[in-house]
Length: 342
Image 1 (cartoon, rainbow, N blue to C red):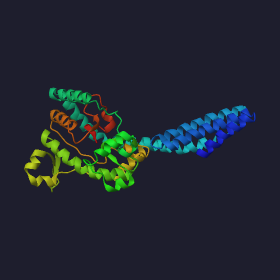
Image 2: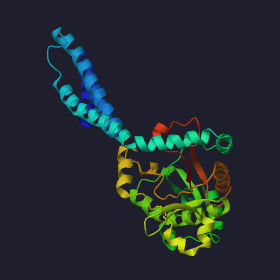
Image 3: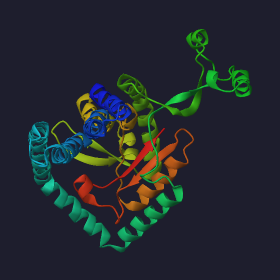
Image 4: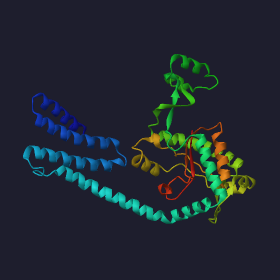
């Protein structure tokens, strides 16, 4: 597609230079439609189908103009390429619509239960007060769901200006640098992400995520102990219930029964990577994850404050789905407060 687009652009320049305006217009119209298809393949992701539709209609329109100009009849020759693209785009769109409707039907019962619980919370004074207080806290923190959040590599000190590099190296004895990094002259600054260098490796995410998962679990346990957080406990006979972490600690036999979240499955991560993120690994923010459950909104809000003030982590973004302004249809009725940490 790149070659075809480039050849059309060259054709426009050549036809215009030798005084063939009709040929130049023909090349321009064809090059414009090919450019749509080229951009579509570069974008990828869910917009691919929309690009096919745009190409199909643009090709029909441009071909009709050419036929009207050359043959005085817009339907003198059928746009066969447009029909081929249409035959490809139509079933994809129909299957997508069917899949979305089928998915909503599968989630309908769960969404009804979620919505019922939410309505019962909104019909109590304590519930409404807790929802409003949580909204104020989230706004005060100022990291709403639209904030920029990506997986970033650490800042390299060897790329800094001379003065900053010298300052960093003077402190190197307090933060040892591995000999291999000295040899290749790659000196990374701890706790300093580089916004110009997004993570581009899927394997790197899982390598870092496997380490982060252990660290996050330890932090979650400490937060749960301070704010009455609960975890899912499953006994051998299959019984599941939520138990406060302080009670789990008091009964050591329950520790082995706690259901800790695992790393995101590779298959699911690949689905999100290809379908939603345009094959850009820096958008995958939940390889390592954890969760806490609370009995009421007060405990949840207190825990949010504890996390924000914890020196071991930095809150990058907060998604508050426990808000009356949130449309629960986006998540099948499910609501929570999602926090991205670094």
